[in-house]
Image (cartoon, rainbow, N blue to C red; front, side):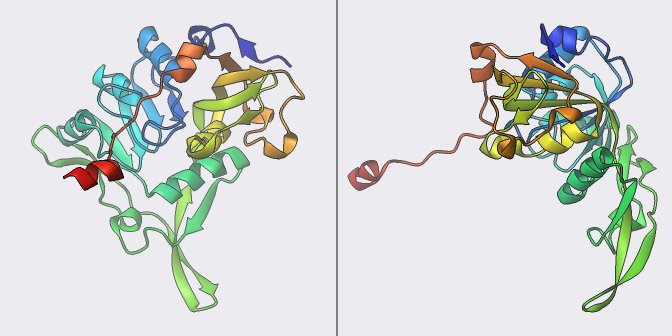
Length: 263
């Protein structure tokens, strides 16, 4: 089945206000920036977004956030986006902070047909006991807090240990970016850009992939496919300019050795 669509705008045309979207990427690495921009143009609002973080103030999911298109975030980290922190602390944005590994496993479980799982992460903290601020009011008081979660003891080699139950995440749509993809939706990510993309693709009920290089079926080595086409419903081929438009979240450099010697 040829899953290639003509443009990012066509690919997201049935995404409506209020849906839940899983988004790949880590920081700005491997984010589906072209699909995110298409959502911005479509003026879709009231989104719940599941992603490790929310980009930066002027790129990636940060652009949707600045335009007030996101109602709720399920993520692990807010530190690189000042507007994210401002909206959260002022009560304009609901945020479910989730341990990073737990978030990845919740997304993977959603794509694997696993309703929930037990983990040691968060035991003895507000993650398990409840009380994490999901939403503040305009005065900085907690308006909505996380509920307590079910815990259970299991035998381990070191004796009984307490675990907390975490529920799987299933999104209405998944947006990911791949280095290479074929017309059947098989995807290959490159190096660190793999990050959250495979699990974001898995947990999307309808998953849309933007690919930097589109190849014909059979050209990808099956041994190196990271996301099988069964998880992908639409493929958008990027232009060379779109594929090359990658931002660096925080540029850190150091002097070259010969420059140090001249000091």
